[in-house]
Amino acid sequence: MKKGAKTRKLKNFIIPISLKDRLVVKIWIVKGQVIKFSVTYLRKIKQGWLAIKRCDNSHFYQDEGYIEPHCHIMAYKERELYKQPLKGEPKDLLNAIIKDFKTRRKILLENYFNNNYERKNN
Image (cartoon, rainbow, N blue to C red; front, side):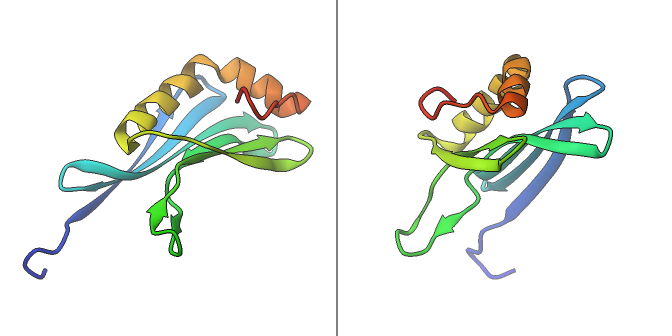
């Protein structure tokens, strides 16, 4: 490795919430700091695992020169409805998203299957 090159570490893990619910987490770490993340809430149905909601900051916008954190708001009938922008530091957002998915999973499921999303509140 070249002198001064960044050492990047990727961590992948699953956080089980119940027998039918889990979070898939990916974290990219540079010099001990979270720089990128992806958290996907999955629900097990007859056909397999279904993505209910995903939040990440893994898209680099070359023209603007930044990474925009956001959540993919999805619905059963329409798949992805829109992206909701987020503001904050990657580590803080990562922890808040994991906590939110765990505590609000029943609401997230209801919204997903009934297409109940309102852009302001989710």
